[in-house]
Length: 37
Image (cartoon, rainbow, N blue to C red; front, side, top):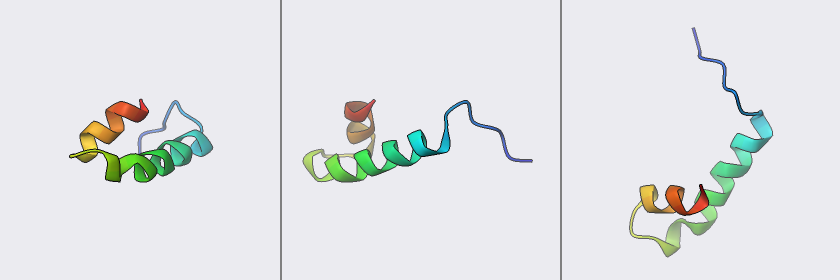
């Protein structure tokens, strides 16, 4: 069974888009995620 997220779907989609947008500016995907967070 999938775990229900405490975050709305649109917020999660936006976060993924933001990480994809800034990813070229960082050495790792993790660094990009930390920057967006």
